[in-house]
Amino acid sequence: MRHVLLLFLTLASAAVSAQSPTQGRKVVFEDQFDSGTIDPAKWNVILPKLVDLKGGKVSLGFNMTPDGPRGGNITTNGKFEQQFGYFEVNMRFNSYLGHRGVFGVRSVGNELPAAGLTFQGGGPRAYPWARISSQGGSRDYPPEKGNEYLPGSGGSKKFNTYGILWTDKAYTFYINGKKVMQIDKPQPIRAMALSVRHEALESDRKDFKEKNLPDDVEVDWVKIWK
Image 1: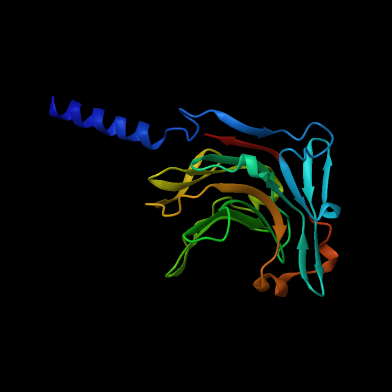
Image 2: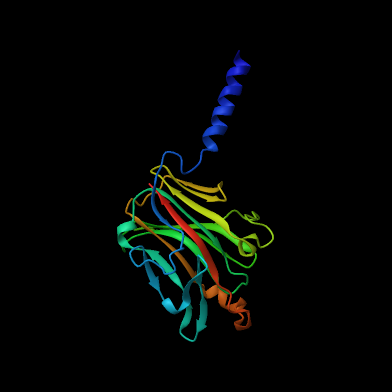
């Protein structure tokens, strides 16, 4: 009887850990990008010359200028900012190093504490990253060393689904429905906005090659659950 009980508890635990992040939630925002134009009621478009919608997919371009990197960016309008929920995007990262695609959610406004939760990719990389900032400073939560989340440039060769679940207990990151990272005891409680963008860090400059452009980031669809 004891062995049966232990088996039951093990199976129950596995079922909880495998629970879908959308279970018990409803879609409150969705864009399949099939209307022919980017809906201004849903999105703020940054650098529109580098943002294009064609064939049901948004392309986010990139340029390296003397004043620094410039990339396309789409961010949800204020009425779609929310506290807690599951944020998900189906996208393909750029193929070369020197710049990067980013999907993420971040705290609205400049008050602390604040959170920035992202998936970043480009070339052979695709990984989750988080930065939590407070009055005492900022703390980064990088991916685990040696963990290939999408081996073989899988983030740039094909579309994948990236999701970020925010509850009062944790920030949880998913790739294609599989949990890949979790940060417990989240601090910030302000609403967050979703964005997909094409950018570069100062550390990317050494790898940038103009000849590799255009090397766009592509977005197929976006959904938010509450």
